[in-house]
Image (tube, rainbow, N blue to C red; front, side, top):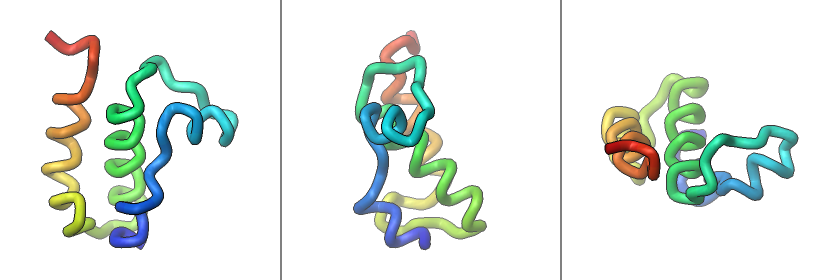
Length: 67
C-alpha cells in the first residue's frame, strides 16, 4: 500500500470529491497530508516519499500559513 500511494495522492479536489474539504487551497499540502495519513494507517514507510518522517516534514514545509 505504501508504495502504491506515492502515485495516487489526493490534491484539494481529490479530498473534496471524497466529501472532505480541507482548510488549505495548496495542492502540495493536501498531497503531503494524504501521504502522512496513508503511511500511518498502513503502518509502513513509503520509500518513494522518503518515509513518514520526511513526509511529515514536507507537510509542515508546504503549509502556506506557516511562518
